[in-house]
Length: 267
Image (cartoon, rainbow, N blue to C red; front, side, top):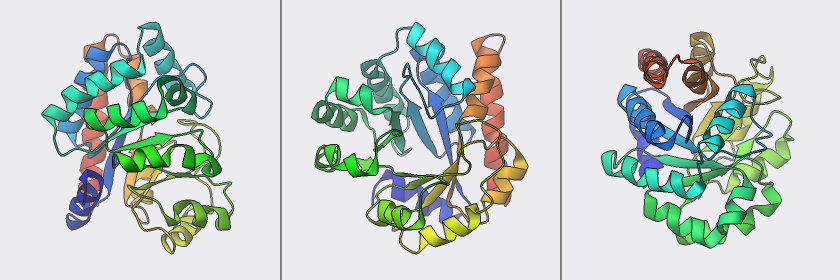
């Protein structure tokens, strides 16, 4: 058992979904991102995805693109994110922390170097949004050595046979994308989503978490019927980007997180 499996087990014992929250680290700066993460955990986030800003975030919509732009303009680096992670881990020893990145950033840092540094910082797994399933072996040896999970993604366009192959040996959890397009796009959920998730469960050894475009109580309640976790990202970062100042943004993001956590506990 590890922090990820322990957290999902705890949520199951409470008859609820886990709340996974994404934060673009470095927006508006790393110090305030660290503050934001601690406030979100206090507000009810069960798992945190620590987003490493990238100049070409092709899977992300306007909100996270803007937060990445602000983070890069503030000089945020992967090393800086890892340094702040150490502080978060010291304060929250049991909360799973997932490093969310694009592959170019990892390659530039060095795969083995990153795996060692991430484990030392208290990271539990990596989610590499643009890493093709066929290339996972470039990362797995180093991640396995340092007991880090590689969190796979399954999209609405993934054929069922390929989806089953992707999740069969998964560790941590599987990130199921709810709709076509980019994060925070506001698109309707894939009409086959419930059917696809039911099929995935037959070959998946780990929990299923769903994300992309979750920005309302109705969407949260709908997804809790057939998922183990809910991923919220753009809705949180939208509040950071839109705040008159960082204090207002953190308050608004924490309020949203608390509202979603309350829904999950009530359902």
